[in-house]
Length: 314
Image (cartoon, rainbow, N blue to C red; front, top):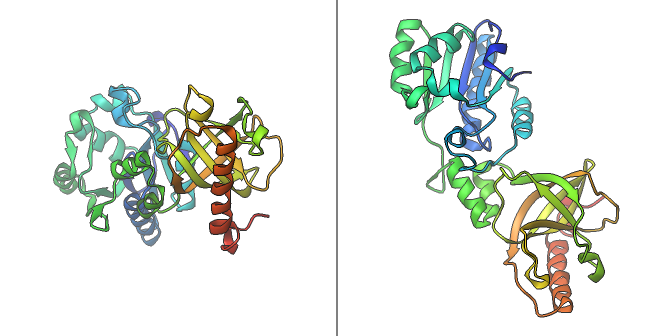
């Protein structure tokens, strides 16, 4: 697999099938497009190309309007695992807002990528003022001799799979349902930073995770999570909130990693969200908080650690 980070870096690729999009989350709908491109490339002995963006196009016009579901690094890793030959992962910038749809097709898709086929979603749009769409591609496909495949919306439980819907579920804390549409558990990662260390005074030390502010953060509350540290898998009780019992002022993401007792400050860990257990709550005392944390961890042990062998802690 080859990753290309600039339009100028694209060398002439000898015959390709291309799919284009922001692909935020690489959800089940995106997977259909990409799998079709990979399958077509292998059947026809040509290259599969995913053309995507480092930043969400909407955020170019209004900064941080839309939070990400997946990091660029994870997007590339997942595309690689799907067998894509070329990933063009470029910034959505002024060039993208000014190039006409016909020039995009001619200068990039044809001259640089030598497309034999393009596979797109039914509502796909591109180029200046979103003037490019499925209809234009179909018209120009006859002129330039390439194929266009338009993929219908993918629905689950009568709901169209979309990044917007998934983002809303994350914001609601409905991480169980997120997996239905995303195809995998929602994940965030970040560096473990120093905090007040109050958790360890009541027997529940936590890893305070500093997460990219551009990522979607689940609703405040307590979550059952899988925690990855140095490639090893553990379980955790993760709190997202302001720690009202101790009058916290800033939103924090803190995880009590079960059966774990190591110093990991400065390390990057990953949290995989399994379910939202309860709301964040202000307790009358630290002792009352401790009792609730004991209930939370007992629930996680009984549901995930003790009964599911595939999740057993090493």
